[in-house]
Length: 228
Image 1 (spheres, helix red, strand yellow):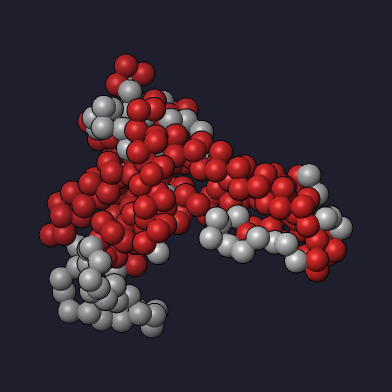
Image 2 (spheres, rainbow, N blue to C red):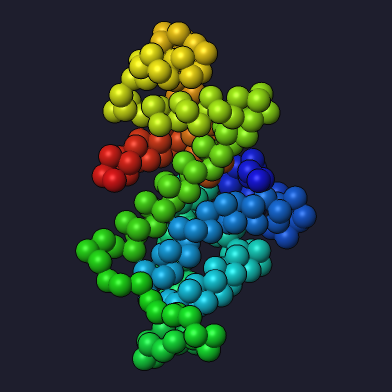
């Protein structure tokens, strides 16, 4: 899987010329595709069906590629915040030409195309949780691939459940024996994996956040995790 590496503040930099330059276009599309899941979820929570959400996401990307994203304030450097606000604005502007408020019906292929049920959570809450989960999934997958290249896939999968500070330490003789390591070596391996994941979280956050907002964004991420 591909991982975007171009900072979003570089993508929107007006001094770099039109957004439709090939390199910046590819970078923007990669960033949008990376966080497509929470984007679709927020459209669903605001009232769109699955098909409408896909159309809205595609339309939002098109508006960005036409230069709309360059209106973003580079001094307010969180792509997460900008994307949610842009999605909400785009939905409200598009609602008149969507069928979001017509009576619910099944789609022609027989599958349900209903809207998300109303919950006590706001669309922004859902978006933020989806964003954080997507970010963590991407980080875990990247480190998983890294371990696989070292032929350590089994080690990664066995240690991953223990990387949370709240998890029990893997001190059992059985786990150590299965991995062919001492209990102390297993604990060290967990620490190394935890540190590696933390480093990748910082890198992933930095892609979608301005330099002076990275620490705050990481704190935000952990606050969302504590609520789960």
